[in-house]
Length: 128
Image 1: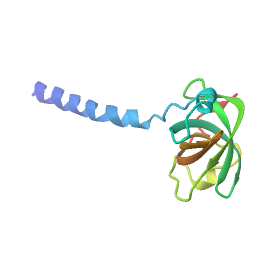
Image 2 (image 1 turned 90 degrees about the vertical axis):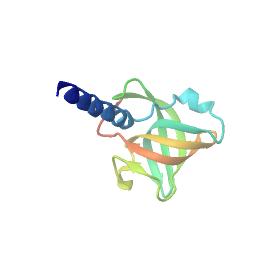
Image 3 (image 1 turned 60 degrees about the vertical axis):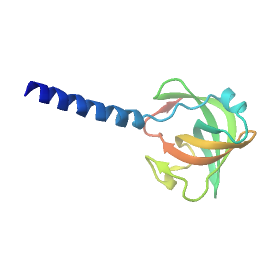
Image 4 (image 1 turned 90 degrees about the horizontal axis):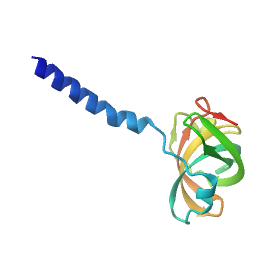
């Protein structure tokens, strides 16, 4: 019986580890890493939204210090958000000035990218 309980507990623990790992947002590139990213490459970026006009999101790149703390870089980017771009932990209305997000995107040019996914982090992080 002890063996059965131990095996069941181990199986339960093993099944929760991958789920917990998936909950962690991807580690974003720094501003300097993004500057050297090749056109067509898939990247993760931390951004603070400056403005959103129709499908264009203008934002400032943030550098990650910890999972909860980012700092402003002064580097501005322009991101294209197609209709239906998945938004995690938020809604389209949350993509507004001041919003902080981790985005997955494809580089289309210097300081430009097409959004593929947006994870809203505004309530969970600080920017200095």
